[in-house]
Image 1 (cartoon, rainbow, N blue to C red):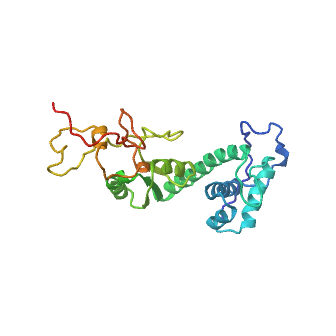
Image 2 (spheres, rainbow, N blue to C red; image 1 turned 135 degrees about the vertical axis):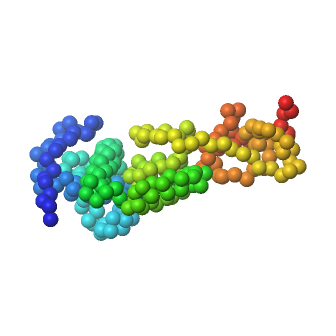
Image 3 (tube, rainbow, N blue to C red; image 1 turned 120 degrees about the horizontal axis):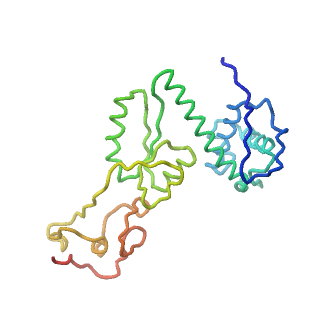
Length: 256
């Protein structure tokens, strides 16, 4: 087995205790051991429960608690608010989580890059996709799989907010979502396509003869659509949860 090199790089986290005692840093902690502990910390942040996080990691709860305690001792701060149960992260713990996401993400990318150099591009890509984009997803995954057959995909249908949260916690590699109404933060974005919406009505419906229909006009009728959490299109005239309020009775489109 290849030898593991000691983790000797030291970084100072902005906003943490400037009196941090670097002498307490164990020279026997390797880079990958540190990454493993940070992975456990991220699981705790996701599950918000020591027992569930330990189960997700496939270890005992005392082992998880010991790993978190070891990180706290090495950094010289308290990261988790403890009581009879998990109560959350301290402000310092939240800062460590930010760094953990970066470091774990970079470590995973490094592993994948090395594997790609040795064996060609392969692995497992986890995609989060909003429901309205699901019919489109095969136009991306199929050509990619033809070019890189060793790559496997897992596609999960999620809301745009859930996609961003999962990517932030390193639970997804890619997200296909709206980018107009959500703060994408540090993630890079690439426009894929623009959507056009069509209103389907019966042949003798008052709006059947309209060439175009505004959101407010459509909103005066009972509509069958995705729930508000799954769409983010809103009329400039004002709407509630993505669709206009029906404050007047059904009408018809303006004649031109």
